[in-house]
Length: 606
Image (tube, rainbow, N blue to C red; front, side):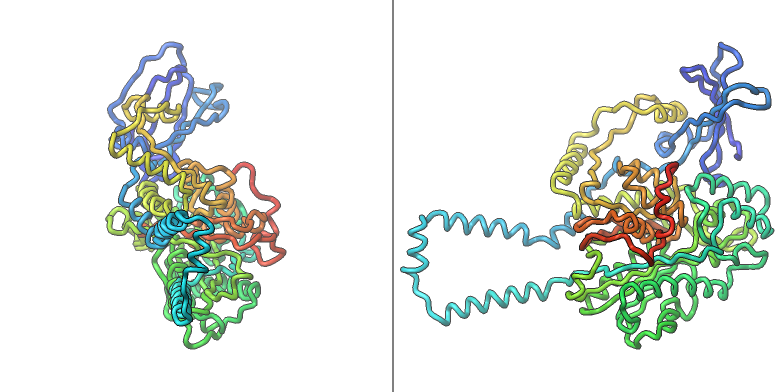
């Protein structure tokens, strides 16, 4: 830990707390502070004027959380025999429900009205018709329809033709439903499997990292939520440079063709029948493109609409899905394949810059391939129907643009630099995205309560402060504020009423913890994301499909269930997609990455 300052506070239980402020730029892992009982029963409170200014700021305090951990009895040193505790201070996601922007609520309702304006006119027409008909008795109504009315054949046929034409025009103008027939997730061979300890030892043997960098990576891995069965390419642990076009193409061929072979086998669709192909890979973008590699390998037809998306981060899978939807809407009766992956070896960083070592610790091999269709006859064999896609891009802001940034370090080694502001920026993008999505998916009761609370806060100010937790009180004291002063919270919609299943991008344990806290999700809701992070690591844009595969392997998806896939990545972008299950998904017997290990999950400690 890089010590920048020290301060002491006298706690009510007479424990002397030395707090060391560390630099999040050079040490973004959770800081650990040691607590010892005082050697004497009487203590005086000593304050040093070397506390970091960021700690003293109230805004910074709001982005920190604490956790007190019992570390047992000190075995050596001046405090030997004394109970030892640690205080972990973490940077967390901002409480994005604190500052919901009305313009994003308005945007969500704008989407809703554009797609459902007939819902407003239909009740009015029914009301007028009912009032008119209700003024007659049954006998009077029958007399007007059958006895007094005079009909001629041309009038009847014209009215019938106009009605049928209007009905036909309505159905033809409606966008076709987009169905997800099936998907596949690549599972690498066991010879590429690596434990956390093997990861560190192989990194040491490669000779690319000094001892301090190895210790830093070990600390990151210990708190990452990643298990001992993830996969990495063999080339990255060699003494030679692994960021070559040859190694990148070899890894791309392995993961993409493996996922596509499984997809075509499951769906029994020939590669030549595919009309749209979209591939997304953020870092590795060779010429010819990855989409061209797939077309060449499977000998796809010459008029296929192919796209290759690069540099769009971990949320690019949903962007590729949105592009495939647009292409299917413009080309009826067609199949579309979306391939999402990332090349771990080509993105490997061999330097010593700590903020650029973080991706090495989290990213692992993975790839997903999904098959979409807009053919109406595929309704019966489809697994899911696409309901909504909402995309948010914060790239206009300079901090958001540079928070995940690819560049060279001082030694000219290429890597991805992760900013200390990532959690704050990600929280802002997430707030915007879910605020726009909420009117489209939440039940009317939740929307009404949420909107009424929001209007009340904007018109009449804030609510009285609520009781704070012990950890919040500690942070308030550390920041120089009052323990009783807390920011008021608006009503948080219950997203469990809108979705049965949640597939949140498995970025890191800390991110998942903060998302669960902010959205008030249960452990079962977050289980697919946590188990995917533990078993496969962060597989970038394909992680949300490993999570859906976990739900299917557990047989949790029933007919009518709604699935929310949420991803975020560089730019900064946050994207959501909502699916509706077309039927009960039975537990697969093959072609699922979880088949051999699903009975061991969930892992209790996660």
